[in-house]
Image (tube, rainbow, N blue to C red; front, side, top):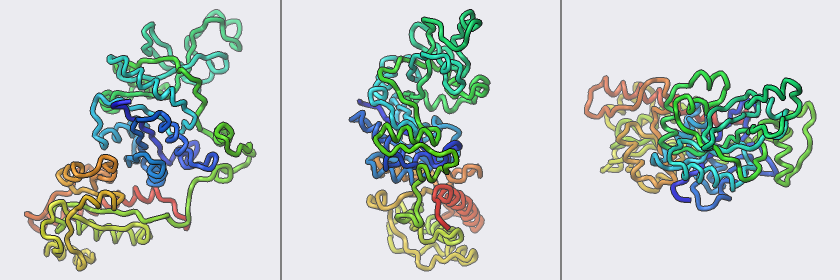
Length: 438
């Protein structure tokens, strides 16, 4: 499949089943089974979009890319839009959204939804459906129904029983009348990346909010959704503890029914460890590695110690244009450091190298110029490691840390202020994703 990417959004903090992507099923994390389903499609790029470093590690061990995204997204679609942006995907790329809790999704359906969108250039989104064959499903608000026109385009999605057989249901609601064209929606989507960007930029709509169905936003704003019957049955995903045991049985693993008082960690434990397997390696990057990046390195080292993460977080700094490696930090930065009780005496400038993209888990740019330079030189498979420091403090409204080199004392103080804000946001993000036993 050309110009097709299968993206798997996965967040750790699921409300109904915390830590869901890392829950063990048949000896492997749930997300690993989902990745295997995507890989079974063959010759297609697979990316896991996540806000959790542990999930990213599972993805990388499984041989696929991991794209680290913001923890603030309201939905998987928003997470995928950021992922598409970070990966530099073109507007006409077909992005298949495979939910991170669908370990039994048939590969044939993944191919089908991508091909469906490719065959309908007028569609913005493609998805699948299956016939409803019993009344209980039709009246269940947790089963989303879809009605389509003669060309297969969605006209409405609802939790209500649609279409509603007025005369038949006046007699009984326990049986479906013959020939009722009721379909349940299958939550597998393919987007054109340009349409995904457009969709996530739109404000939520009334129908979307009342029904709690994100796809209604697309319909209300006129984005066409093409729907086709799934060519293979699609088993239900994982939402509850009982689902974990059901899926384990289907995957050939242990299938012990949970007791009424079973705790989640006893039934299918979250992967956790007394100490992380390895350090998280951070590199702060500016232009000359003389002002901003050594200051960020010192602030981050202090913050790591303050939060008890000193053994876990390894901090360094680099310069994109550090022509004279081995230089000490700028004298003004050294003076500022002393005033803030930061030790910069051991700093020596180092130029960013190609090996650094593999050697660090995150490379943090201070401005758009640093970011663009790193993105241009970074291997595509590692590009998700290149981030902008202030993106970890979006609530601050600050985009970058301006270079103070040609400025005065106030410019250096402002750079320090922004670095402190960015580093605090970064470590908040790290702490949210690193569970450590006390």
